[in-house]
Image (tube, rainbow over all chains, first blue to last red):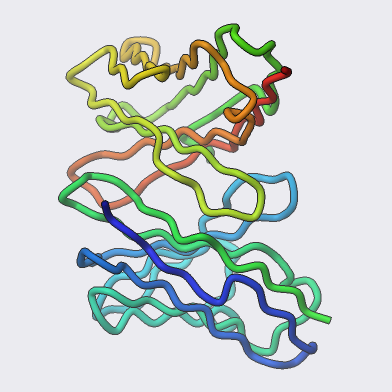
Length: 115
Length: 112
């Protein structure tokens, strides 16, 4: 079945550093990938839609200069949290759209803790 | 504007009984619906889907019902098992588009 790999699964960093999270579709090509954020005991919040070869579309309230998204190939999208601060600590999840299966397949998530 | 709503944030069910999770949507353009299951600190996993041309889809213990006129769908789990305890998200999309809209989730607890 379709697999989406996301790593790292856990990262701890100091305030002010940048963190890159990778999302790969392992056995299918994904023209569209999505990035979500989840706070404890809350729902998935869509941050942005990442389209291969073009600029990402950000949801209202999400700072594009803070959360840099690059979708350079059909199998890889990256989210970079720039100059991370403690309030950026959260669980980040990516998903990839597999049109053949008409489904979203999710990565396993990245827990970011900013000290 | 929440186009997909799950009005029950939590649900507790006795093991062996039926769990019914509900989902409502507002956009009549949605024609494809999915349910995902999520454990803490993990990504959601696909459970079951239904196209708008159907009103029911069954897969083992899981059945999804779609009522297009009411813009309502439900997920039935029977019999419920403790391992079913998780957060369940419903999602909707228009096949012509490329966007999936998620509800806020329902946390199901199956009591042994």
